[in-house]
Image (cartoon, rainbow, N blue to C red; front, top):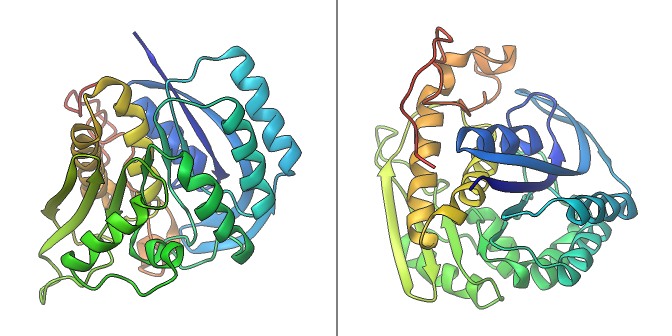
Length: 290
């Protein structure tokens, strides 16, 4: 049976993040992608130059029309931008709950540009997070949601993952990529998964790459695409992390964006890693299975 996945997020014309990255990730993981746009951005590998929000009523209309026709198996939210859009999305999802809702509380782009208004933070925390089957914040986002300091080590991440789950999310994947790297720039990336079964610490080698634009979008989209065909969040997250690691490793070979190539920006990951070679375009046959 095919899986239909939904992205409720902003547009990135460079293709590295946002709805474009989500749809590419859905396709790479054998899910049919649908999308509701919440904002238009003017951005590239150099950063975000402008944001134009979609009216909240039209965001809600997109969702309603889609759900009237299409049976969605899993969904993710990304950039919502402002409190009124958060409220519009929440109002629809409360009336029409979706299975396997992944909430990526997008607040800041990889370039450092702010993507969530200050007044929207409370709406995300109090209204959207309690609807989440999986919440996927990074360390700065977790600190904002909890109103405290960023976790400085794995013990702190454990505490914050539990505190975030106490906000109402059924499961939390706290991403530790912002923890300091080793002295040689290497070491491990540590994430903490908190579910009703307890805490799980997930590690993988840190990849030294500037192709990190859209990593949060890709990971949350991968979780949504894979969850309907996995037994639980642990297996889902493990496979999603594997997909992201390959996408980062092959990203620099894409050579997308002058800013990224010159070292002044961040290039995209290779969303279709395992399907075609980033350097030659030749088709491949090894990927994270459906």
